[in-house]
Length: 193
Image (cartoon, rainbow, N blue to C red; front, side, top):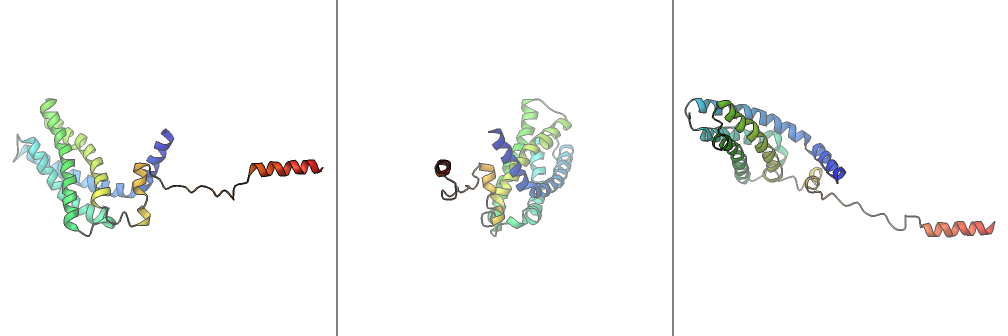
C-alpha cells in the first residue's frame, strides 16, 4: 500500500514539475503583490477592517495571477472559451481566497490574534499555503484543461491522481511455456535413455 502511494507520488512529481515551477514563480510574484497590498490596506485605507483588506489584496493578486497563468504557466491548456475559463478561474480563486480569509478570521476572532504580524502570518503564510495547493489542482484539472484530454502527452494525468493507471495487457497463453508439456517431454526424454 505504501509502495503504491509512493509510486503515485513520484509519478505525480514527474508529471507536474515544470508546471509547478512556473506556477510557483507566478505565485511568488502574486504573493508579493498580495502581501504589499494587504499590509498597505491594514495600515492605510482599510485600517481596522483586516478581513476586507485581505479580500481586496487577494482580488488584486488574482487579476495578476490569471493573466500570468493564462499566458505563461498553462498557455498550452488555455480554453478557447475565454469567458468560461475566466469564470472558472474566478470561482476557484474565490474558494482559495475564502481559505485565506478564513485563516485570518480564525486567527483574529477565534484565537484572539490582534497583531499585524500574526494576522499577516495567518493570511499570507498559513492561508496562502492551503489556498495555493487548492488553486494549483483546480487550475490544472478544471480551469486550464481544454487540451489536456486530447493531447497524448497528458492522456494519463488524471490516472496518476486517481490510481486508474492504464491496464497492462495479460501475456498471451500461447507465448507462455506450458510447464506440464515441458515436464512430460523431459519424462519422455528420461525414459528414452
